[in-house]
Image 1 (cartoon, rainbow, N blue to C red):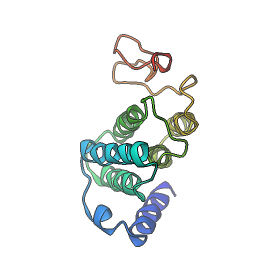
Image 2: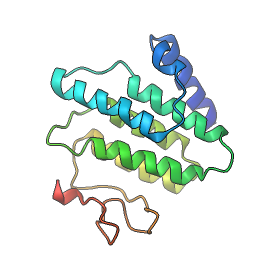
Image 3: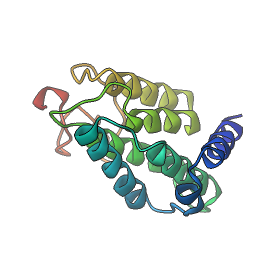
Length: 159
């Protein structure tokens, strides 16, 4: 079901003017983050969205991950969500940011209920620009994403 939702999202974005972005193959997290950085800048500077560029790049990357052999899918989704969330840790925060929508899309692709719930809570938090309460995603060292343990992770209270 989640694969169908992801595929449907890519199809809808492609049909609504995102042909140039959707036609690209976003096979690296860095390429997705570059697009999403531009979206954050546009939202901050011009108070407008990029018409789905970040969401489309995220959907394409998640689709790539689902087909890629030998990739730790759950960790790759978690890493993407961490990077997307970090884009929103700025003095500027826009409710309903396109990056928050991309995080919600990532939650739909999570393979476990626990990870899906964690990412959904992160989405709700960043979407509301409320960085006091956050969900935890385990980092490779086992720390919480926002716990600030030995890994030097961000703490919501530091922002």
